Image (cartoon, rainbow, N blue to C red; front, side, top):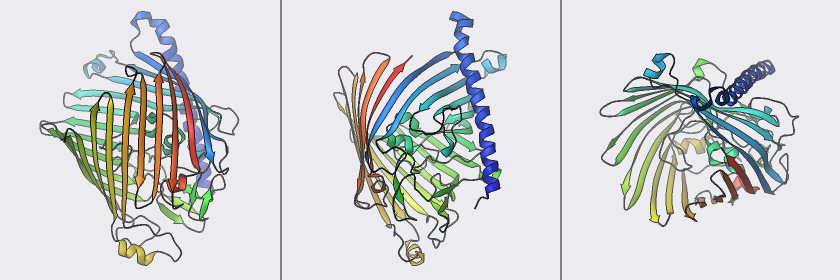
Length: 458
């Protein structure tokens, strides 16, 4: 368990990095906003962004910081893309500089307004957030390099991830923010090689990046230590991974195409990005155990639509024998997907995810008396229906998660209208249910919400 000295040092480092990050963003914003006036028509880059207001009314318990809403914020985003021409080597290497920064005024936060770079629970009401800051170069026709803060993703799933172990923000996803915020950024180096027979992606994340999961401040959940629903009264402490080289995450993808069919093999070496391990049950401390993932996927035409298959073997490196009930057992996940364009701007989709826990007998034998016992086999189905109206200016999107084994589900729906080319209004809802309070969606059933977003883009 981390000592108070280590935690204090970690917060000091985080605060220092926050100030550096805030300085970079402020300097970049000033430079970007001033550049068009200085350069005029010769401005060497693309600049666009948006301003957005969002509010989400909450229907559930009163355990969180604010019982009547879980979303109340104003956000401004700027994205700047430049193709450097000097020095000449950057032009020769087809270099691309990308910056995407945001200013967020989050009325949900109780802290006093101050500029503070986002870091776990230390988020303040006003913050600057760096989503992208990277440089891409192509020193060779067959080689691309991308260094800096970036969004990483791969795989075939729609909202479901097996071989994509890059960080996600599930608090934003469940609260009603735009889908863009589900995939969180990482400081990383990505190298891509394009060969004749196949292509290769290699990713290194030097500092461990975890998922942003429910912690009780904005969304309530089931606390297995207190055996009840909790919010801000949660007893759980999340222990992160120290910023050391041994905690680096590496991911590789080997992929290609044969005819109309895409195929890929994946390898990941790192950690669970959700805190799946229990470090100390007496202090309610959870952490991120070591993990390898080996997998493959195929995607291509199938029965008038697009079909996909993705498989992953999750090698739980700290419990390969399956006899430690406080660490996940090894498991195999399989995802079947199918989508079809039905015409008239209607698209339907279906997914089936099957997960099998390996070494299940050992898991049952070592489970402490009175503990919640997980199933050996878990099934999750998703159904989607997306329709466009009014010359593709009105979007009606629906997505349903349902697990017959967990007996729970999650329905998300939204209606978005392009009022003008620059203005969009989105009305949506998140609805959770479940027979058991400890399942994935059952634990969230007190977080039902309806949200409204108004966005002006430029």
